[in-house]
Length: 199
Image (tube, helix red, strand yellow):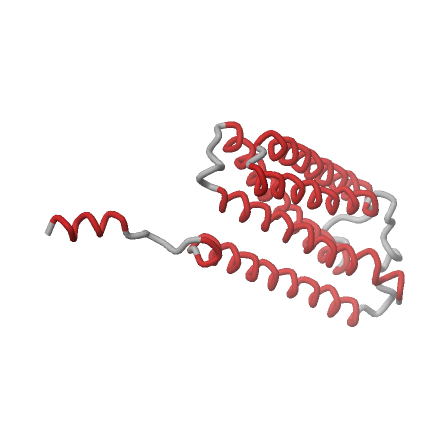
């Protein structure tokens, strides 16, 4: 009986590595959120096809702020990737903390510039179907960026406390979420800013 009890305490409580419950949970979350953006892009295309006038009504949106802002967000993914790889190779906590801090700062810059762009728009949320879908798409993406910033902040605090050694998977999942947020922005940016210039 004692042998059975000893064996039971050594059994894993969940899967490890790529098959852990956390990993599958993050993949399911990302898949769900990806479909949300697919629906939003379909709505944008549908509203544009049904619009009696030109689409967007005010012409293609300016890329004066959105262009550099996009570069900042995409560059943040490379900074985070650099930090995670350094931590993977040699448990370089200092490099990881620098990368997390820079990525967080770049995310805050993205949010601030996006807010400035919203303020400079000549229309409000309820001005037209275009304004509604524009603010909905960019706003929902902004919520995802905000969640990503919370995750980055938590990972930074954990790295300061030296807790990431045993929670390395948490770092990988947090980084995966941030890369997803950046990838979604490429699609949103292409839909809103680039496609109107091609049509």
